[in-house]
View 1 (cartoon, one colour):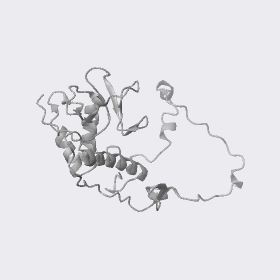
View 2 (tube, rainbow, N blue to C red):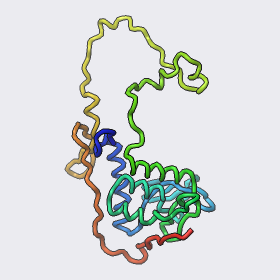
View 3 (spheres, one colour):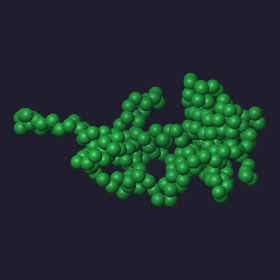
View 4 (tube, rainbow, N blue to C red):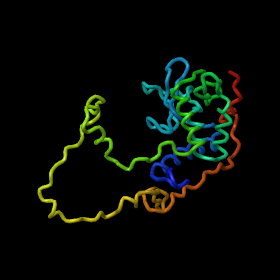
Length: 249
């Protein structure tokens, strides 16, 4: 998001991708009743770590361990994913996610990893990874963008500490060599076909058949539509997972 213009995406394609990742998880909940907030997370016992995916190894909503073994019983509503989406999108669904995991914590050790999708309770692990992301999400919710552009010098990585031994001591890359131009006066001044500012805001180009052909960029605000839950037919007991109950650590 822009530092000085709230609501405008400075890199529209990233906002678009993030919005799609959010929407597909909301749609899964609307269609199946399975509350969905996916990420990787630790688990108590073997395999100790799993990746909850949207699409992996040719299947939707796969949960895999580091050896690519399918572990659907370890799929979870990840606390960091749920709170992260709540911080970024103000919707009834993200409020529901926050209600599910908001009390899943202790005062001394922070949030637990999450709740199992199959209703088997919470993951009794509290990690720095999970809580670090949650703290960053809450900071964003409180103050807006965390990283702010304060230095317009894009070459500072290559030029900082140039005349000291600090670069070598810190294993920083050596400054790029400067090549003298022997014929710069005769070089024609060429204008770029498209200026850089034309790529500030991007959105997909949808064809008549509904497929996405390319990405169009312009100076207008991104204008992502606010996602809204839709009413779906009631699921059967076999399809519907119970909403997580308040966990008493």
